[in-house]
Length: 234
Image (cartoon, rainbow, N blue to C red; front, side, top):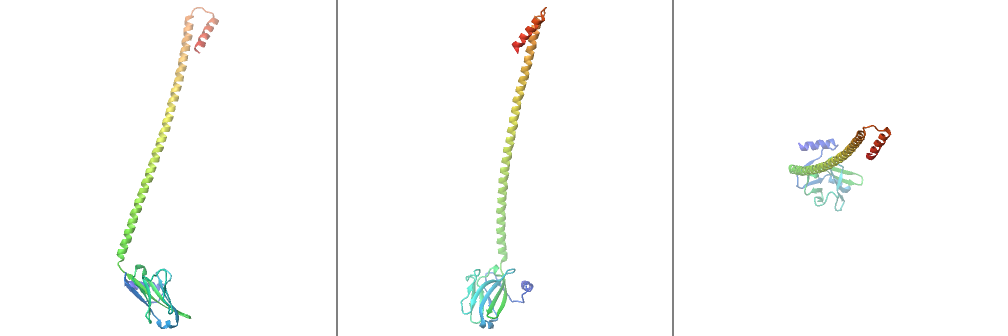
């Protein structure tokens, strides 16, 4: 089934039918470059890798009668190009999941080039890798959740503190205003009481003077005595 899917993908991308190799994850695999009868007139042998949706990446360059050189992403610790005098081979010493893809060999001469391709399918215990990824994502999610909860708690604490301070300030201002109002009320009440007392004293003095002099008296003398009494309490 998987080989059928790979064939459909290659046909959709414009490839002709190509051979496919299946390898277990971690095992070695070897590609053989065909059409070696044309290599006598070729100058270069090159190996390329192409992952799905990606462009060609140069893996190995091998000029004629010269040792091969490897691309930066393909170290000799995992990749090895060999020449047994008849066939040119590329070996992946230990496969990983990312090795899956299309591998091309190109025989390049002065006037022509010949290409051949092989599709590599890597099979293995992908469930373990998936579980590892899920665990890492779960740990990351839990860590992120703890951070979010801590930040929310910190923001809530600061907000409550600010609210309490504002409430205290408002209460203090209201208390000061009430105290000022009480003092003003006391002062006004005292002034009103003092005014009433003066009026009472004034009335009492007038009444006393008029009562004492209830007999016949000159009006001018009476007015003078009243004025003297008012001036004394005024």
